[in-house]
Image (tube, rainbow, N blue to C red):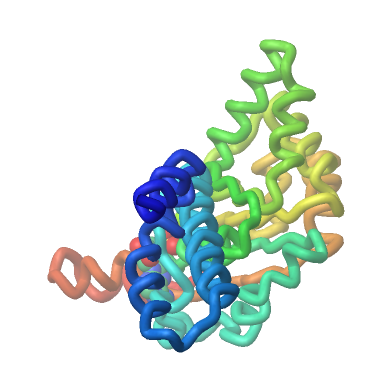
Length: 258
Ligand code: ADP
Ligand code: MG
């Protein structure tokens, strides 16, 4: 009877982790090797583990990461221009605790998004708030918020994100209003939270992305003040995969990098 009551109470308190390990823990405890506080500790640990796993999965779902790939899945030997030590230093997430930024530059297919996603997953594992967004879609969100007079609230939301990943800046130029709002966001996050940004354009070309030299300089100034820059000069992994299946020839693959 007491057992049933305990299960019921655990269920009503939503102690799923405890409930799932109850039978196993009780069975082991019955062997008489542990005292009752150790049994309690084991059950509580099961609950803590379950809750943190659930939190991770929920955060992963809402993070907007376009796929779930890790650093372990990244083939560093394919991309020798990447300093593995530098990426491992980023994996420690020191940059996140210091509220620093990361900029990944390079031509298409060299693994910029993969690395950004993998660092995002590391941060989620640490219980950090992560949000991944494409640059154009981010600017559209900012513009919409501005026109609907809720820009402050939207900026507030982005400020609450500990790691904001902005993917593919520079595939399309941002026109004047969008560029200004993007600058506003970068300024608000400056030294308050981290941004990982990926771009296929070198910094010298950012004037063209922002269509305004002063604005481009102002964005770069804040973004790069505390920043790790990963400049990838190499071959496209996507093209290599296509080449393996015989869809394209080799000359495209050996085209010069960034
Ligand atoms: P980018 O963002 O630079 O255009 P992606 O990160 O999207 O490139 O990479 C394209 C695809 O190739 C993705 O599926 C990615 O996981 C994979 N990829 C790229 N580089 C590597 C690598 N060095 N090792 C393993 N997979 C890679
Ligand atoms: Mg990409």
